Amino acid sequence: MRSVLAAVVAFVAMYCAAGAYAAPNLVVLMADDLDEATLDRARDLGLMPHFERAFGEEGLRFTESFVTNALCCPSRATFLTGQYTHNHGVLNITHDAVTPQGSFSAFDDREHLGVWLQRAGYRTGMIGKFLNGYGYVPPRNCPTCDPMRYVPPGWDAWQAMPDYGERHGDPGILYAGAYCMYNYTINVDGMLVTHGGADADYQTDVLAHRAATFVGGTPGDVRPFFLYLAPIAPHFELCLPAATPFEYDVRGAPRHRGTVASDVGLDRLVPSYDELDVSDKPVWHAREYPPLREADKDALDRGLRHRLEALRGLDDMIGTLRTALERAGRWDDTVFVFTSDNGWLNGEHRAWGKVLPYEGSIRVPLFVRGPGIDPGQLRDGMVLNTDLAPTLLARAGAEAGVATDGRDLAPLAASASPASWRRRGLVEHFRDASWAPVSWADFAAVRTSRDDADAPSQMFVDWRVDDVRVAVEHYRLMVDPWQVDSLGASLREPLATQRASLVASLAALRHCGKAGYPTCAAAEDDAELVFHGSFD
Image (cartoon, rainbow, N blue to C red):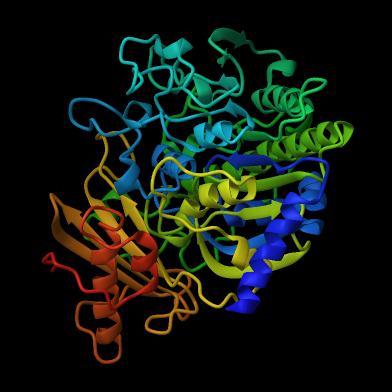
């Protein structure tokens, strides 16, 4: 215990004493729909030189990083609150009479990371995509406010893109403004600034220059700052016409278009790609995800190339930020986090998209560099996106205004083998509008770590409709990393014992943090908790 405490104290001290500022600057760059495989492919192709310098050479990588809800709005709300979806209440991406608990309209913007850091003396800035529905639906805490001009509390500099415009070439107010690389609007502290279709209007570049201005600060302002930077790259653009989802696409910056070779494509030999036999999946899987056609596969390959080109703009954004921070003399004092709101399925299990409880969907990149970080290191303990807010708050010496579900990553960052760490994590999904992804059922899943003594590296998924179980999936990832062989209902020892442990954990995790239930940290660590509810 003394060694662990000493490591944590040393880690915090290095953060806070590294430079001229009392607390480190904090920058979080959150990509949109970026899976680990695509990022690794971009790195292998040499497309990310600024990323390599900042994070590959100077940073630390968490290799077992997961989101707890693989959908934009709930995931971003988790980042901002440190809470699981069932606790922060932003259940999905839309808001209407059928699904009222979703999008920006369900987010309580009175208490979140920006507010907490601002209270602690930070200069706070939000640039880019905020939450689905922002600018389109009324804010939860200001129903009479103009959604397009609304500035949530907690931000000294607000430069978010309202979520409005065209959808796949059809005019109308149909959720797309933030999802266009051109012809979008930015709410700059309540003033609407519209960008057109010139090369200089390319969204990633515009956001990068705005971010550089923010981190440069103003003369005499020595406050530490927190920047939440959220471009849409490499998410597809909603304003581009597309006949099928496989045709959805994204444009790279003009300087990057056509720079990825035409023979670059997805690995079609991966066992999960266009999965041949999905009889181990829930009965609706074959209906919702039929076998891929050759045209679909070609479109996915083309989409990958364009996603890689869009990532080149993201890499330039990192370079622009670094230059601005170095000019301001603040690079060495800045904790820089790179991650994504969720992963992405590129044909695995016949699927294109996210939400589903598969590794490509829930696993995300997570890199951090800055004072106190041992560069070039890997950490394989299980990390969840609930951990980001508590970690940043700890670095800042700030406190959350609500009970958070995550944990400070300092012990894991300081040691590859901390005395104790999370054993299990929850992944959850709540049904949405009919047009939204996976609208026909809810699921809750427990993902175990490789160090879990009872059930190492396993995934158990409980699918429900109106809280009635309708299907289960169970994967042993150490022998089936591609999740192509879900275990059936009949299990022999010791798998039956493992299944029972997973079911018990899931029962706790589904309600953790709520009154009468254990904290989420306890539910993640202890498979033998006793509950006073009834669970099948």
